[in-house]
Length: 351
Image 1: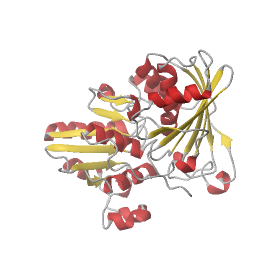
Image 2: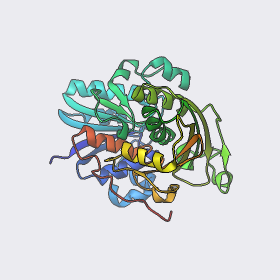
Image 3: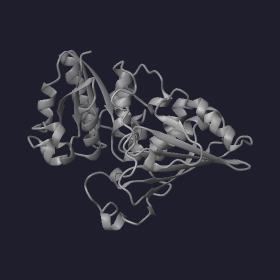
Image 4: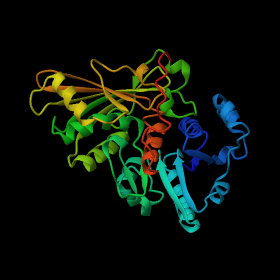
């Protein structure tokens, strides 16, 4: 089978590094270039030193150089460009692809196409959308929740959002709980990006735990909108994000009032039925642990109930299931490949 030429945008951040690693190891994708305007012409190995043996003499390309690499036939594009910059950038690539006769499949990991309306995006991100005419061309969901779409491109939900959606969508779709969802999510420092700031600087983060943007995080309206689009029911999400003293992973607890009494075993069985056949989502006995999923595309889910409430606990790798490998999972499907191609590496374990 011919390998699909694949471009990566936003090339010097943590998520782009994971996209690069996955594309280089993917048997059906062929790297056609990685863009970083700030690093254009620079050595990729100098930025991602852990990939030195795989990237060789590869250099970062500028935008105009990658635009010229679009050619007739099937191509793929994975964008890890920053929120607010990705939309206008992708508009250029999509327009050039159309002019060149390129059948381009885009998966965007930024927030720019996660909202269906430009005004909803602007309300959260406090600036105008960069390509409002393209909003209708992107579907947004985790792969386990949307089997088919007529949209040509995909927006992958955010890392926190992916974990919350894995809990909220079955709860809402199956009518298991009321609409009030209370979520507490703890994320690793890689979720804050590559440039160090006070909240990600090691002496501040190590042996520390603290909440930030309480009840005001931008992923909350994202999750509410996506859940409503997928289930017809809009939850009222109350989200407390927290910064954890580890590099990667997310531990998310979503609590809600049950619509009717249900044992933990019954809820566990219900979620197993909901996610049956979904290779990368496992409903575990007991509580899930992050070390069982870090470095993989897996998400593990555990549950607990009492007389009238339920807790759904989700763990995932924020850089992988919540970003890069989730995007490649989508790309596999859109290219007609088996969903697990290039994504079966197990978790790292003792990180």
